[in-house]
Length: 103
Image (cartoon, rainbow, N blue to C red; front, side, top):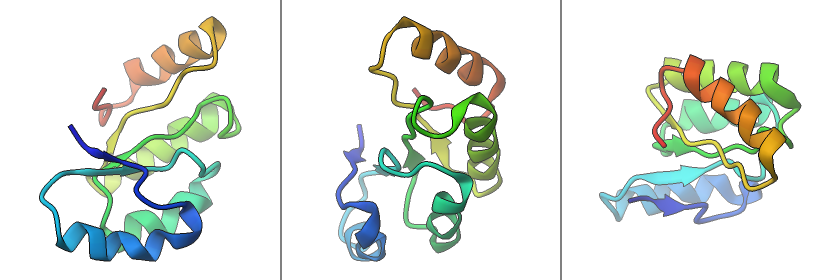
């Protein structure tokens, strides 16, 4: 469905090379925690899907901010949520109110 986290965030500049060699969507963001971490990623335009952890990214409000930024850059959102039922409930709330949720 997509290439998941092909490089660590410290090497996001390599996403350009990966994107030029594949037609498969690229997903990243598991190790990014605030909207400021995502800002340059969105501006560069080499990612198709962001996958942030709601429990690690400063909670529902920050994740909603990140999802809104993603929507402005036409990037889909696929939140990661393997941390239990409370995190899942919070993730479902974000999913229900974000227009760019992919999965």
